[in-house]
Length: 161
Image (cartoon, rainbow, N blue to C red):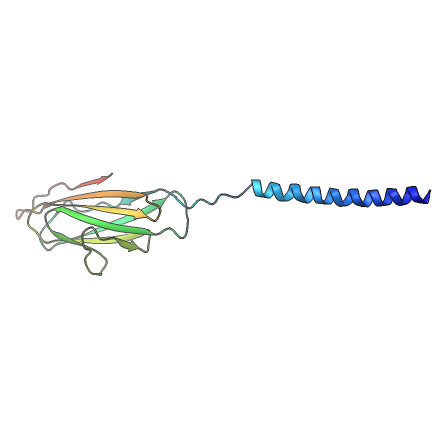
């Protein structure tokens, strides 16, 4: 009878160990199957406050821009570049040096102000591209008409593309 009890205790111990191993294996495999997906790439929209309708030579216009991402990934970096295709002028961030056309400049804030200064007497058009580290990009087009000496007001076009 002692032999039967010893076998039963030995068998129970073995079964208990197998059960513990089986439960731990199921727990580990379920963790591996439910990997948490971390999203980093969030598309964004741009809003621009209204700007004056016309500009004269040597005048400047303040352009307020805000980036609205769909989500928040703190390591996302935003960059700005611009190209002027009609007239001449200077675009700059606050009191920094004016931007060079088609060069990329890092933006350190999602809400910022640019200053455009006219250097010509004719209409002026330029585009601003804002992109992020994941290849998302938005284009904003500005078109200023030259301010006439008689004070006439001309429309400005602002298009989000």
